[in-house]
Image 1: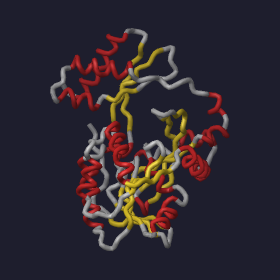
Image 2: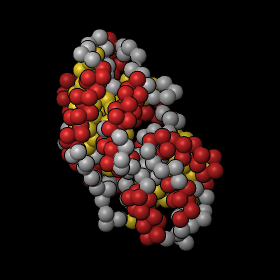
Image 3: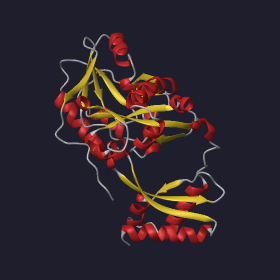
Image 4: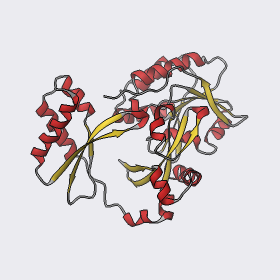
Length: 321
């Protein structure tokens, strides 16, 4: 069964199971780094929100021999165990002040997201191959975080400049998601657990640590939630204070959009070998939508400047199903 037929068959089969009060819609959804996933939105007339279930990996399961009826059972179970968000305070989003208090930023790879960046307000850091994008933080609890990407049309409706969005996000993001720098022994178990939940192989980070061609101490920089924590690189003073604390310039390894690794600089460290390791791990272990960069970065404490330490010839790239 070809992919398009699989999607339509899933939709009609689930429609028969769920009944006429449900509306099912297939839609392509562009994720980070240009990755296109196909989602099935399952809604009811009396509900203000509807979960979207991504079908790409179910097709991969079908191709490896999982029976179609079992895949339907899996999707039904996933839908039934996907709680809808609580009632959103819509009146808050009619207030400009409330909106500005909820704007946060995330850090993504710029070359891999050029099409997306045409549609959203952003701040480019070409010297780092990265861009800041903006989101509304709508609802957050211990297990989930509901966000909405801010598009150009939202910015126009609010009559806010990109600079205004950035100033709001610069204040809100560290307040809502404080940075954490932990030594590797403190962080590795938690990172591996979270990475496994996001689809990264559990051994990938451990493999990186085993294959990295050096043995100085490593530190993990992320935010308090462990999600989209690479943006902590841009928190005011975070790298300067840490470099001052350990008395060294810093090498930054882009583990993923969720966290970065920090190594105290030493003249004995081979940037070439580090770059090769980062590229290999990105290609083999990190899910495409979680990749931040194939470059490594260098932070100079004396100039308080972050820059690319070595330029890889290979971009992040995308592969559509």
